[in-house]
Image 1 (cartoon, one colour):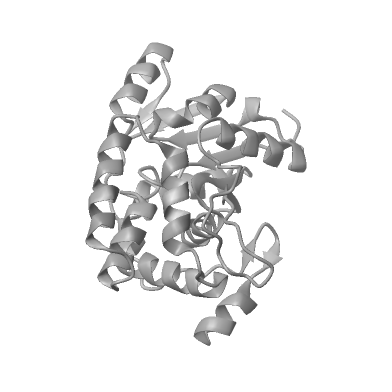
Image 2: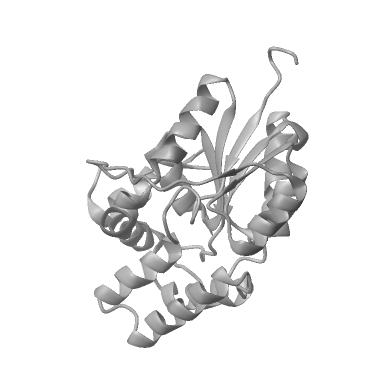
Length: 252
C-alpha cells in the first residue's frame, strides 16, 4: 500500500455512535417545548418500532419531519438542534465509537460520519467525537433561509448513502474497496457491501444474520461518554455557518 493512499473510515451515527436515534430525541425535545402535538410522540414511537423491524418508511419520515419544521429559519432550526443535542443525546455517545475514530485517525485514515440524519446533525456528531468530515441529508430552504415543508429528493439512506459515500470517496481520491464502515442497520447493507471492511456495531437482528452469513466482524458497544461541553459546528461541506447561529442566538 502506498504511503499516500487515502483510506476512509466511515461511521453511521444513530444506534452506532449514538445509543438511540437523534431524530427521535429531537421530536421528544420539540414536544417538551410544545412545538409538536402529543400525536407526534406516538408517531415517533411507531417509526422506532418499524426501525427495529427494518421496515422504516424513510421517505414518509423525512416528509413528515420537514412538515413539522416548516417555517423555521435555518438559524432557529440549528439552535433547536443544538439544545436537543445538549439535553437529550450528549450523554448517549458510545466511548467505544470515539475510541474507534481515534485509532483510525492514528493510522492516518480519514474518519467520516455517514448518516441519514441531516447534514447539521452529521456535523454535530463529527465535531463532538473528533472525526474529520461528515455527510448527511440536506434540508430544503427558500431564498431567505426558511425551511420548506418538503424533503430533499436526495436522502442519504440505503442506496442514497452508498451514492453519497461514492461521491465523497471520488472527491478525495479514495476507494470504497479500501474503506471501513461501522453500522448497526440492515438499511446500510448497500454501503456495507461496497466497503472492503464492513463492521457491525450492535447490529439489528436482520443485519446480524447477514453479517454471520458473510463472516463480517461484529462488535458490541455499551459504554456512554460524559461530555462537559456540546459541540456547535461552524462548517458544513466546507461552508462557514457560524453566522447563521449568531443571527438567531447571539452565540459566537
